[in-house]
Amino acid sequence: MPKYTLNQTLKTLEKLFKKDITTTKQFRNLKWDNLDKIDKELTPVEKSFIMDFRNAVIKKKIVEFLAGKEIEEESEKSDRTL
Image (cartoon, rainbow, N blue to C red):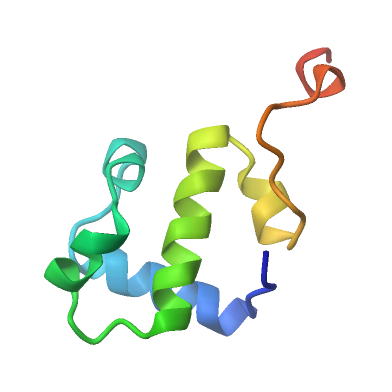
């Protein structure tokens, strides 16, 4: 997964929030093919960020995503036992 700068992250999230994409459910429902319907001016990097962020939202690994870590397919058992 590419690392995104803080500026890219904030700029892209701000674009989504301005389009009323503000809930977990809305992020889960985002699809690559629908991103142009949301904003035709999204860059390829912004689209990649959105899809990577969507995957982090689905897997509940937001902090890991923002830290630039790989998001594993399945949560490790140690993550569930706190």
